[in-house]
Image 1 (tube, helix red, strand yellow):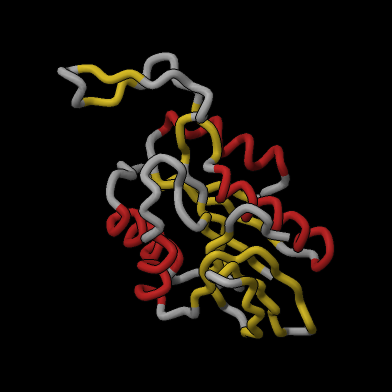
Image 2 (cartoon, one colour):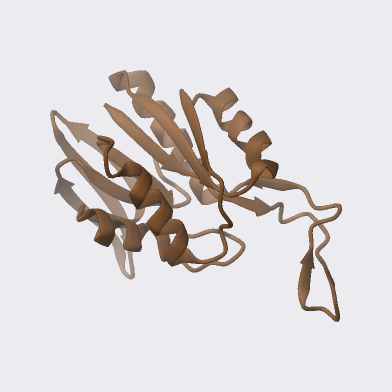
Length: 179
């Protein structure tokens, strides 16, 4: 099984945020950057799958070389491969397009994305990616199990948890509680 985990790099929520140029530009000085926590839940789930089903995990980041330490951390956590697409990650549609172009000639059974990033909170990349790749999409996923070749997902909805059965390949937008 091949798994792709898309990871974004975000400011640590404990970092003091400052702006320059009359409060119009984010000041990166002194900021600690981390793997987006919702993406890290996805990476953790991918590692559990790897341990039980012998999967291969690739992490992918759109951004500059300043994100390389985060990719190395993902490898240390348990990813097998790391890819960085050297481009600014400032618009959801462009990020999704770059990821879709990278994955078009690859065969991934599961593509994980965090439900959203904690810096922009747009939550658009997984849906855009699903549309571009013409793959089914599960949003707000808090549980994922396997029954032979069938995936059983648990998704948070307004009044509880929705359980669905689906086939691979699939795009899953994970969030806190993904087990």
